[in-house]
Figure 1: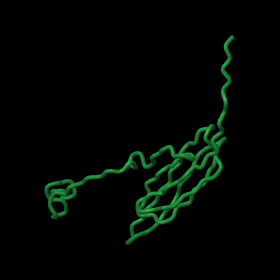
Figure 2: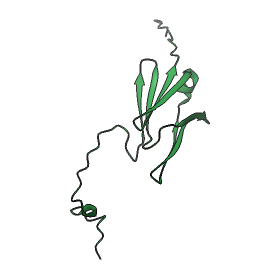
Figure 3: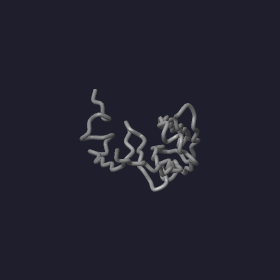
Figure 4: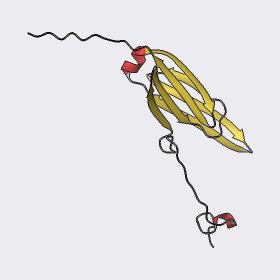
Length: 120
């Protein structure tokens, strides 16, 4: 018996599929962190989910959401550890979901510290 799912030259009778993905959020690493002018931005992959809950607990940013489309369940639960330095300067967290990506902004209050240099 042949298994048409794993026969990539006959993918369910449709022929060989061509896959190409170019995204900072991967299946095995569903979040991407970048620095912004006023803090940090975290992108979290949440395919098929229109709304997520974002919470901060135990030094972790938690992103969770679920949805059902055409009798298929979509669930996302991601916990991202946040450093003590970022937590100490964190002023606000804003987020939105756009095209299956949760865009989370960690708005930090950066403290300019003057470092004294003395010749001894």
